[in-house]
Length: 234
Image (cartoon, rainbow, N blue to C red):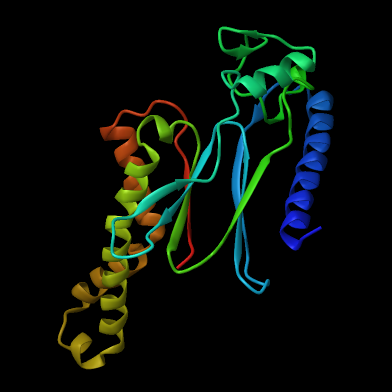
């Protein structure tokens, strides 16, 4: 078994163990809910850094890829697990369930999750795990739950961040250089320096993502859960 295949199997085993533990808590505490999962693991210890994407349900991940001077491209790293997919539907039926109105047992749309004790084993806890070798053309990975993708397509989301992250990087560098220049700082008022310090603290990826999510909710009217995670590779 290759190292990459071994990592994928280890991830799947970890998800199986997590689901067993979570189901035990669900039964003990009368919990009925479950959750979808999307995540990444970046292995920089191997000869060529490798990124693994783990998906369970209908959250999604996209890699921002720019192989040359062309525009940034969003490459899907995940596939939705829903009852509308023929293979997923077949698995649900084989496990003793049924699909009604596009939902497992007439209840939820996704066919894989952690928890959801009342619908196990119809809902699988086995994630899809994909991987790719990290090179200079892969700039970042964007992960988000289902509500985000009702407001943005993958390409729109990646392009949004691809336009703003370089500007943020440039401003962060400008501020770092400014605070190293004591002569320049001495020419400014205390209030101006405090304002610059405040700007320096907020010039980061978190602020870029916060503005991104603000647009999804307040300008594009996303009404479902909207969360996102940005993993910069370069």
